[in-house]
Amino acid sequence: MGDPKQAIMKKISINSSFFTENRKKLSSLMMKDSAAIINSNDILPSNADGTVKFIQNSDLFYLTGIMQEETILILNPGSKTKEHKEILFIRDYNPDLEVWEGKKLSVQHASEISGIKTVFELSRFEDALHDLMCSTDNIYMNTNDHDRSKNIVESRDIRFINHCKKYYPLHSYHRISPLIYSLRVIKSDTEIELLQNACNITGDGFRRLLKFVKPGVMEYEVEAELAHEYIKQGASFADYEPIIASGENACFLHYVKNDDPCNSGDVLLLDVAAGWANYNADMTRSIPVNGKFTKRQKEVYNGVLRAMKGTIKEMKPGKSVRDIIMVTRELIAKELLDLKLVKTGDVKDIKIKSAEFKKYYPHDVSHFLGLGVHDVGEFDVPVKPGMVLTCEPGIYIREEKLGIRIENDILITKKGNVDFMAGVPSEADEIEDLMNS
Ligand code: GLY
Ligand code: MN
Image (tube, rainbow, N blue to C red; front, side, top):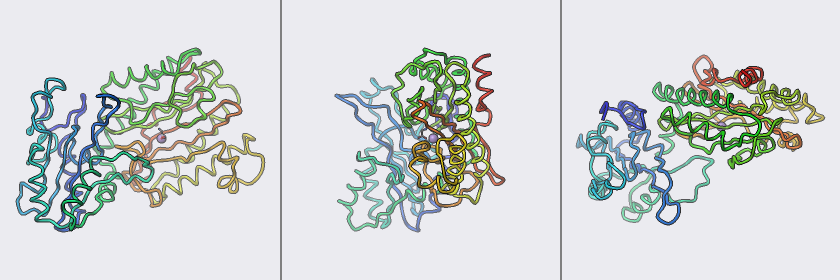
């Protein structure tokens, strides 16, 4: 089973000390004499008896490293019983299930992965919950409080909260998410290494595509090339559908059909990235299908690249994401004027209100990155060292069937920032040279 102190996903391992440290930090933020209960995600249904691939709850993963369904963590730092300060519950051993799905985690293996000494089978959870509720008034529960989440499906955490409120109505319930998010938004050295690796594999996939893309190739064939590179390296696609969009398709921001041909004269927009140990890269590149940008395409491309470089310079402690967004709007507004896409006005007017501006630049430049692709983090507070953000300006001209976006992933440091994707080709000439070499 390899090093027993590691969480193993494919060939990827994270030392249990990472999860232990995360629980320690979270416990120190909780109010005195309180406990937290955090559930795994469900295995979601598809149709008939089908299910979709299991995706773990990021918060539970961050605190335990456990990649299995039906897992529950209780943190009770004030418990008088030392063994009960942290309790992990995993599925009961089930020999019938094992015949179909293979081995699930044993109590001992779950303990080795998470660093939690007290691991019980789930059948003991109801009794443990009752003991906890009899001795603790303040209970933290986990909810998905991402500001852009539009999810209407009831999670295991929500079902559990409803259950507790019904049977223990006089307890005080609190949100754990603000505490967990305040930790997750600052990446540790371990996380920085995992993210850099996801970006490196993403770069390898992109280099492979520069040799592969030719007129006539289908968008889905491009996706298959990437799958080969990522999976061969033990990685996966990052936690979003790859966007492989040729010609006009590039103007539809979350185009994921990927079923059109890439034609000579098109620019192919690739918003594609690898995930490594649940940590996500997020990259966009825009390349000429026939290996040579037209003069116009190159003008637009270089405008977007200038906006990216100009924005990255401003991604430093003290600025909020909102400030950074405004910097890019101004840079893009200037490019739109130079490209004669907007006719009049001064840069400051164009960038906020104009419908023309929104037509050519309908999104903003940045989001947090980590266990989530659109990771947790607040847009209105100054960024801090350890935060990781994307930088992804674009210009989309439907009437010219042209959409260009370039996206790198940026780590904020004390002195400024580090570009995780600095080594992934982004200069127009370099891309053309590599496509034609
Ligand atoms: N990579 C897709 C997005 O950032 O929305
Ligand atoms: Mn992105």
